[in-house]
Length: 143
Image 1: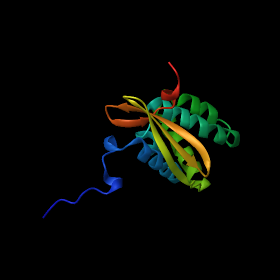
Image 2: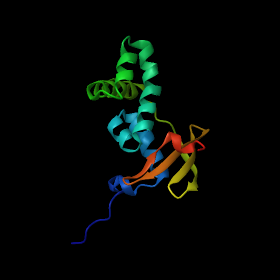
Image 3: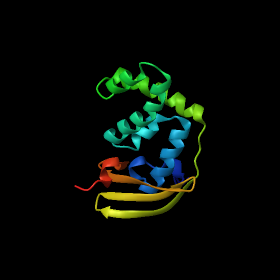
Image 4: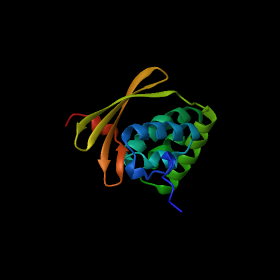
């Protein structure tokens, strides 16, 4: 019996190309699956994402902002932030339409993925790590 070739969702994450990660990132965000989101991002970018979505929650929940601020250094605070944000993302039920446009090579270990989210042109920056391509918001900055 011959082994089956892996389905796209079964491909090891370190083998994924940046344009595939963009799609998986949006799917994970829509599902409120922050553990999967985290796997596709550098830690600094992941915390920036938590902060951006966390500010929306902080307006509705007193004390959440303080919890969010502690989350980078406190594992239990991070766990609580992730739980609250995951639920908020699931309740949004937002499933944007993502259309890949191009992947720009910006260096041997850098890529920029250009895409449209519900018709609006966007881009995400990526860096290659020893665990594959990761979303890296800072990779787009000039050094």
